Length: 271
Length: 337
Image (tube, rainbow over all chains, first blue to last red; front, side, top):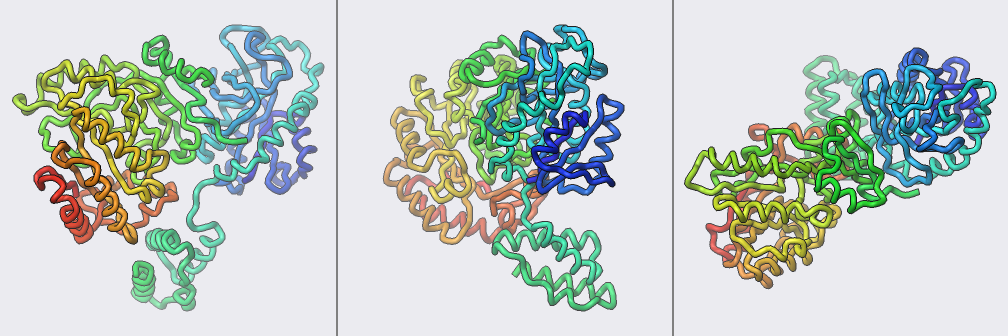
């Protein structure tokens, strides 16, 4: 499983970078090592949306990636405690009232709260913000739901203030995150996460080999789909791929020759 | 870390807060996180959900149903000879997880929606009864088309509620299709031949391989015996009969146990079916690469329904008749092939 942390600020990312010994890739500005990465989105709608789209165009194994947005949030004093870490079960975009619900399927030790993604920093306590408030989560969920399923999006917020911050310089951002990094690390190190990958019958590596073969015999896209379907069926029934390499040895000289090869493959698979 | 238990989260529409059924449900799960929502579709119809992954920790959604409240039966549903045949959906989705179930293709989420405005549904049934196409014949209403409602009875007494409702209306019959063995919840109700308890039965090998979380055969059989003794109308459903190596042996064994324990003459009827599914649902399930082999067998597409080839259907048909024709009269055995 690949865990991709998203933070709004570099200061929020620092404890993650040091905990997982991540190194920066200067081309795409992603910090990564093994199955962990960090990407910094920037603060608020204007910075987050283009950065997330940039991220989505990067070449990741999205079918086995879990997004974890970690960041500071303002909290209502009646429902949250300063410095406390919460898992988010509902995100509402203040600008249009749309709500998003990350699936919470695994056990955890934190409290759960709902969160409102506001357009501007909230500096006054109000019942309009009954639990938590930030400036990025809804934009992240909205964009990423196109490629990441709801059970692979996690939002973890740490309360930095009770919507009463006057001077942000007085907030020790790194420390607030650092205090919870061990519990987060423990949580994501469990085996259950591996069952959250997209289910596959033919692995990516197997698919690459097959595509090379298909290219050699110049299959059309429709023919490729048909063959993949039959090969999946075969693998499901026999628990192994069929040996088709001999069909891919020679380039066909004509369409009809190619169609003959495909017919033979289909015949072999259905038999 | 482990998966959260089912119903760790209850999503409730603001408009049903305080509703009797909703309150009962919340009381039933005192440790659940209650999350208020505007419209159940905002969570149930989210894009990019995974039905099978959500089955690891199913959530509950309490909502108000909007019309239509009842629907005429589809071609895939067995009508059992009733010409005024309808279904209603008091609950969407099921606590069980059967490999061959169409719900995986019908809905993008496996979370369970309970519609708490049961009175609206019952009023709609009242109205529909007045305009049913065959007015001299009773109306048959299936209340477990999109769920196994009896399996839900220890969560909410919906079956109980519907049976009481039907018992007060002369021409309303109910079909309650189930794999559950939870009959205690309805044992106190006076048996009525208007209420058809339809048990789906499969050999234990099929239950273990394809009917996750359902009671084993013996528990279902004991429930059936119990209800027959009390005088309830019972239908046995062998639907779907699945084909696999040595399937005959397993089914023969199951039929023998049934014959040894039940008097066939006491049954309302028997229905027999094979795997069948609308092509849209089938392909939607297959795109998610299900673990089950069922979606990789050879099927024939006839008018948009994928099912077994005719020769295999015939094989099943003959096999069932051979095994059950002396158990009850042939005209009580209905095939849905």
